[in-house]
Image 1 (cartoon, helix red, strand yellow):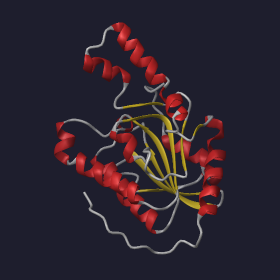
Image 2 (image 1 turned 90 degrees about the horizontal axis):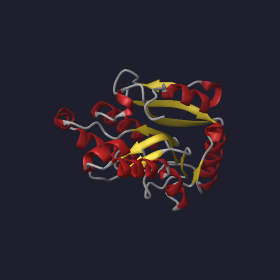
Image 3 (image 1 turned 180 degrees about the vertical axis):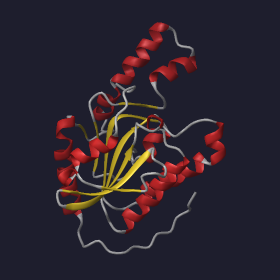
Length: 230
């Protein structure tokens, strides 16, 4: 149910070792939870959308916080765990005037340039640019890209899409049905590596993390980075 609100920190606590984690800047940009934790005994950095705040919409502060957090995690070669559940970046004139396009671009660049291990899971929904900044792309070099069955994807939600195009009732029903099947279609075309039973998410993350660590041919070392930054 995309309309149901939940605190993503409860999800994080179920996934990490001992159910404990350290949240970074919890009062700044609260629409994204950035946290340090251990997974299978290995330190990781978690970036998770927070549905309690604006339904998980990514605003300027959240994007800026996440971009810096991703950069720091990558600098220390901490594996990144992305937990996606958002309706996109925050829309509207006020958000645009605050610089959401630049902030979102900065977050997208940070995760795209990160060379550390990346594990991406779509929990419930991920729309438009909101999915891309959370590492749900075909070129983010993830060790794992997965979703829950029933996760909804697309440029925007089915209800908003139907209103935007003036769809009839039958057309709106077809759009809604297509949205509900989105995760399965994505998995069938390798958009997702797999669809995961929520009860098995921790085990799936542990397997993927071990795979990523085994793929490292040499100890992680400092690296230089040159890029055009938004």
